Amino acid sequence: MSTATERLQLPLPRPNVLDLAPLYEVLRREAPIAPVTTPAGDPAWLVTRYEEVRLLLGDKRFGRSHPSPEEASRITTAAVQDGPTGSYETEEADHARMRRLLTPAFSAKRMRMLSDHMERLVEGYIDQLTSSGDVVDLHAGLAYPLPVAMICRLLGVPESDHELFSRLSERMADLTIGAEAHTAREEFFRYMVGLVETKRSSLGEDVISDLVRAQDEDPSFDYAEMVRLCVGLLFAGHETTVNRIGLGTLFLLTERSRWEALVADPDGRVDAVVEEIMRLGAPGDLGLLRYAHEDVDIAGVTIRRGDALVLSINAANRDASVYSDAESFDPDRPERTHLGFGHGAHFCIGASLARTELRVVFAALAKRLPGLRLAKELDQLEVRATLTGGVAELPVTWR
Amino acid sequence: MKVVVDQGKCVGAGQCVLAADDVFDQRDSDGLVDLLDASPPAERSADVRHAAAVCPASAIVVED
Image (cartoon, rainbow over all chains, first blue to last red):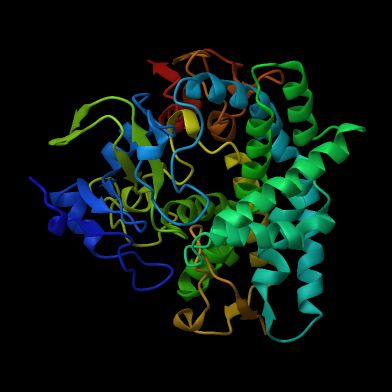
């Protein structure tokens, strides 16, 4: 029934870095699984309602691989979540092995044990910021260095490489530079191969060392797959949390009462604040990519084998049929669940790491800098033109 | 209150540990759920039910 002219073009224009396109509300109500054209110009389904997004994330008939990858819809020209990944035949087994290898290293208990270390780092960043002027950049001085330091420590990557890998991450996710994004991904792979081979002679107690050992012992574990995993962990391990700290700060500081409520009781309120930041924060505005592995009828549409789906976590997390006053930032809301870390088999492996980082950051800021406020209007802030989005700067003052 | 976990479904997200670490843990070997208390006291009900609700693999069942 749908024709090309009826298809919505992604991305849907949004008013600013905190709010989303009002059209999502219409889509959730009238076309929760809608035919769209991706930024790369290919057809896909956009899923916007909480119920279907959650359902599809947990449904094994949808995966990240494609039965014939060369025919698959492309999502963007960036080199992350741009098309199918992995092997159609072995996706489930490969993914199970990956989870088995990585899950213990990112467990909730281990991440909690890192809290003290994170607190010391954050104290140091705040000391540095408060001694360097009246207006400082919280992005460069706190939001960026903490997740970078933590993921380097966990993966066993030299922190001194941060400028190199963060620049590569930025270019890989850039939506505006065309094929250059894929060149950056190749460079990132070469960097990782170099790192892996340097580490091989003296493997340590870190995640990349674990992966090198596992790949060495398991003939079915492809070398390129191992390198791809390492690149993915280093990319996702800092990009996402940096952005979340930035957006969280903006949610809290653009409405004074939100910040004051946290300042009044940092330890008592920080967990709920972090969950609300995870629900509402929408740095990139596409969604999680899946391909149908068989024909599926759902919500009045027929999805064909091979079709691409963009599961809009952002839209699902603001579904008014699930959340009361869904668009408003309210850590006291009764609904405590969200899809900010995904759902199902691919649930974010770094969720406990991210939660611990966010908790430490916002508790420390509320205690140390109760007078914190933005030094620039929201609309004046530079927004990054990458898949993962977020702000490029966060000028603040506290006096 | 009776709690049942399914390690076959568990994806090791650790959400349950964050919700109720006196009832759930993750095994050191593979990160999968380790049930510490299969019959937690009634006053733990809200947190245990929350753990079941946020489990991304629906691997936790709470029975009255």
